[in-house]
Image 1 (spheres, rainbow, N blue to C red):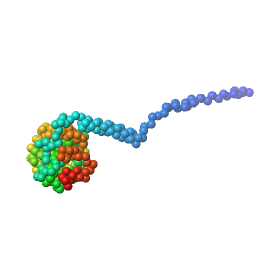
Image 2: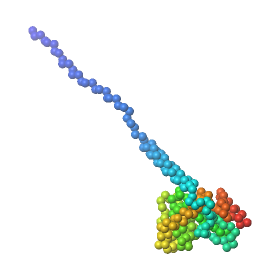
Image 3: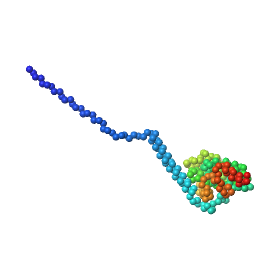
Image 4: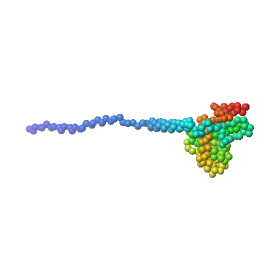
Length: 249
């Protein structure tokens, strides 16, 4: 008789239990594209505001610093001041300190021209430069007008500046080439014009008007003097009333 041996089953191989995934820290999420754009735009605005603030401070410093022309020596009209209209029966003299890039000056321009047409026999008109430092092309424009004046073409260039101001005003780069184009259109001797623009004496002539204006209390444009007295105007209508009063109308 054969005795059966109990069979022993091999123990099941233990499979290593899968370890739980290691815990990960919170992953850094990239900000949405819109948010990144907003942050960049905000930074640009902050930088722009800073630059504009520095420009404003520079303009204020220039306009409020002590002018080179002593106040006691300042004159509203000098022998070399540019006369737009010499009245044959002069009863009053109107002097304007102006900036060709100034929009307010442009707004007053038609009124000044109307006064010249209506009172040309009685009212003498004098132009003086006052280019605001914060305007990129105001000095360039004044220099171009001064260069044209050297060829007897002050008035046409003066008028051209205001007629075209919307095309070049507030540009952040030089528009001297545009002003040179005006000179060509007026038929000026371009070699003489270019030489006058490049001559430091031309810029100095503009600067003298500016310095004397500051010595007289000019801080913005347009500023008018009527018979040597500063005129406070809030609108072109105020200027008309002041002139008519001086003329006895």
